Image (cartoon, rainbow, N blue to C red; front, top):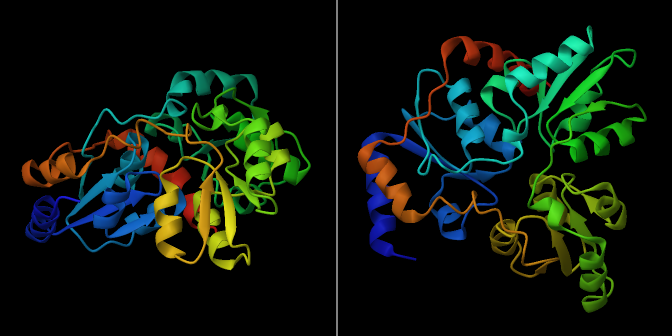
Length: 302
């Protein structure tokens, strides 16, 4: 790690009264300089609690948008504004409005991995870490539209025992995971439990031992008696798992599970973001106000 850049970041952070939030999938060196590291739910909650003038979000754009929506009086920066999310881009606000028109009276629910304009069209927002609890609050006689991730949607609907109308979106990174990869990893590490993200296709989820959000994976890693754990999600999480559990071994199910967008934040552009106060993430007020309702409805559920 470049100690001069880290020193510059620490200095600039104090000068700007800034806080750095980093997702579990970002580069290890970025996680190390962050004030808080977590999954989408943890970071969404943290964004409402920080006592700072500036929030620098190290992750992808929809995450920084969410922070901006929840903190209209703060400056939210993202080091690389091109860090997008292919899944979030698989549905637009207009497409969701068309879907809602075909299902009058349905409850529209979006995964947090969605744009502000999609959140603005929804009644509720969920993350992979709280979807079970949030969806359980919806009356069972109401039709549910779930966007954009078909795999998380099918995971939750299966656990609930009711069907949703699923948008055919998906995470390209998790879609690369196969059952054979799980089988090969198990063969190399007999007895080691396999945990995968619920964004994975059903046949992969069914072949795993645990289906967990990244925050859930961190808890499982701490609490499991297993000394070796196989990890079926974006490889960035391995840094946090190994750092928090030095006595355990974490093996990626596949080294190919890399999200290029999550890797776009570097120490260099993080320093530049603080130095030049760029790039500021803003959401039009009318969109932000409607999107905030869906996000706050989620955060109100323990």
